[in-house]
Length: 439
Image (cartoon, rainbow, N blue to C red; front, side, top):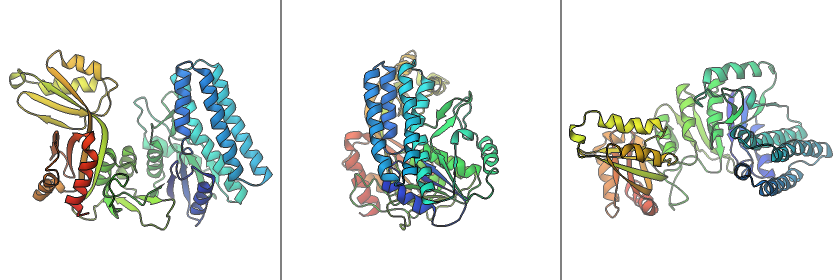
């Protein structure tokens, strides 16, 4: 059994779905195919939910109608036979009737989760109809039958494993299964989701639950690159990464992989392959337990960072000061990325300002606080780079002209992170590409 996940761009056009169908039917190996929503759909659904939350029902109706029109055009290029086209039209009718019905219902957050689920439900049902038209034997598995999260929004692999195996046992002679990424049920049994980018997470959880031989993540780039190819002209795909290296890169900004998706694969030792739907013969990147080599592998950047600077003249004598600081962030469920300390000050970085006013208010009861927004964390990642004495030297030799705000070194053996102004990000990435990779 293997798991293959295809993102929004991979199923974003009818001809892309046709290409995906060719990829997944090349052999008879048993597989579960996880699909994202058609590209652009989730953004539209988010807008519809936001308009409903603001009680702008006429504008929401316009968005729904526009999305319906896009899908009407989509299915005419997806399938050709009258029978398949009628089935596709029936699917659209079902889901867009639901979206129109909610215009007459009081908005709430649970309803919004139902709205957001429509994208994956549409993409998988339409893809299943196309496979049926091609005569490909398969089974559509509703992810809501087995994907679930607990009261803390955490998925439990063993519970998913039990439910998934029960579902799969109903189809012992079926080799091809199609299911949705992203969506799940919460502890109350309501429709919920694994947050944005969660289709990667779904695929990794399903691979772990099914004890798959591999989890393939198909996107629109040839694997994980050594730097951001959207910003840096000369980059190259990395053949192999360890789970630890990939987790650092995904968390600190590498867009090709959702950060949470590494954990299930690593826990159950399921290799992950990053492949390109548009160039299926390209080697891509494989992620497994062991690194291919030691040393620097890649650079990633994470935007939207806020530095919180906390100063107290009493800090030197105040036992438990750091504990008090961390308790404030824990209270508001705000994660810290980087931290630096001195005798009288602590600086931390966060990427979520939802509770920043409340955090600052509490911190100011025992310290002086200042905020720096518009920051970027740039991470240099590679196996055991923190133990290589020349790694830090090469980093700073590359950044002689850059104002570095913070440095995190030694907390992870595989990561050196720096904080810079977002305005300097492009210059930093290009300088590191030259200094570390001679490109």
